[in-house]
Amino acid sequence: MKKLAYCLLVFISLVNNTIMAQSIESDNNPRNIIYINAGTLLVYNSVNLNYERRTWHSDNGFFKNYYLNLGAGIFSRNSGFAPGPNSKGIVSSLGLIALTGKSNGHFETGLGVSVNIETDITNDDPEEGFEKETFVLPNIIIGYRYQKENAPMIRLGIDFPRGIYMGFGYGF
Image (cartoon, one colour):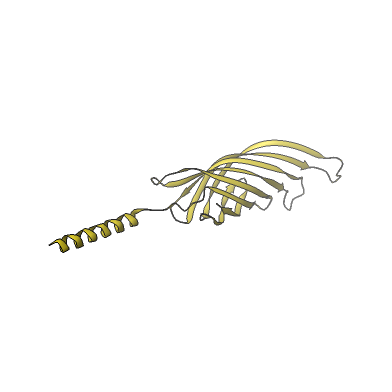
């Protein structure tokens, strides 16, 4: 009888540990991400360096991770095949990005604001014909992201004002 009670106690403790081990999930999303992002609308092109910091994580709801995004880069805009002015400038952005899912592939969406400082080249003479303009645009992001903690990250999607974008970086 004593032997049966001992075996039953060992069996119950092993089953209990197995159940607990299977219910624990690890969060494999990085807290920090640095990446280069390039986007184009054919007549508008940009390249940006971005830093993201995870500000909030939730196990409930559609979106699981929220990141604060800071970015800076350069852009160029031309008139396409029609004659007209070309411009170039610098851009800085601030936004919030939300990710779905608990695995490595995520739907991403985001909202933010970007400040653009643009120099219009309105004349062929480089000594004259420059006009500087500063304007603020909203950032709207919809895309796909593949990321792991301490591993490379890739993202693809559509963004206003960048257009179709692709980004490569590292999460840690």
